[in-house]
View 1 (cartoon, rainbow, N blue to C red):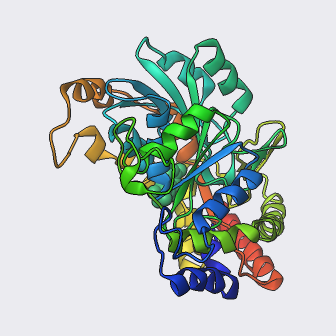
View 2: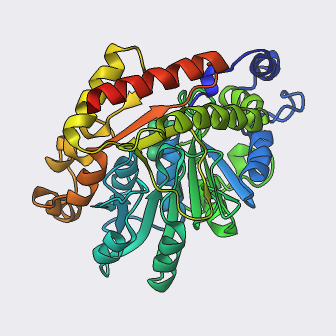
Length: 398
Ligand SMILES: Cc1ncc(COP(=O)(O)O)c(C=O)c1O
């Protein structure tokens, strides 16, 4: 996810605008800022990009998930159903609110398995949080139907899927609330940053206030503003937003290059009958941030993963053995290792992790390799990489 790869004068110009007037904060200081409101400008640009009525910028993708859930009233003791394949941020953001992450299986989309979601619903369930992993998407029509039938919120963590679509709609704009990350390794970057997107005006107003200590943002005197409810500080700075503003203008160019490179490698790998690709639900169009494929079994996947490294095929992830993205290595969560006391309700709510197994997810993640698609490769480099990947996989299969 390569925003950081193509980085230069445009970003510098936007950042210099901010440095020139010295207002690094997104709110207030109207007289000093010489008309520069980078965060507001970026929010407007993102409304267009994500086809959503409202966008609230925040300090990170993790903050975006927490703010999104809080804005819709998710909190202490509520259960949020989420996949066991994601980044740790997903459960962190839920636990930050005193809510309980209920981890369930994924399917061959690498996203939430709708049947596992149905089986996990209890009277305490408040939300389903789908994570659009590696530029792809889960079976969104099934998940939308489940959330509707059961009157549950559908929150989309689209941090890894900027630029992907489903039935023509940007990923992140399909559920009640969508969350994005603009950290350093995402498709567009602010350095650090995130966004909550929604068409629901009251969720948006809540997100706007909650992410800035509860400030109601009425008038132009911060000290005189009221605080309708408690909030925290999840603000983005103008410097970060300035970088994002330059990046978002280049998103169509980034996605086009990403898709071109992805297709060259996918086509090459398609000639190996033992390689299959992650399922993309009908109507879906991946962002192509990663090429995700399956090998016949764990042993071969282990071999290919090592051989890729030995042969200089970098940035290919075998998540089965990864500490950050799959339940298998999340002992700190299973053992509830927290710096501060966790509530009895959450402790109790997480007990299921002592015994729950994830065979269906193991079946997919053990055999999956996801390769990052970079933008800075020349066409020759992509082709050479594709040939090398084919050669390595074939030798591991023989
Ligand atoms: C799926 C997913 N959700 C949330 C996050 C958190 O984003 P951030 O690093 O901006 O907090 C990430 C970051 O990698 C992610 O991959």
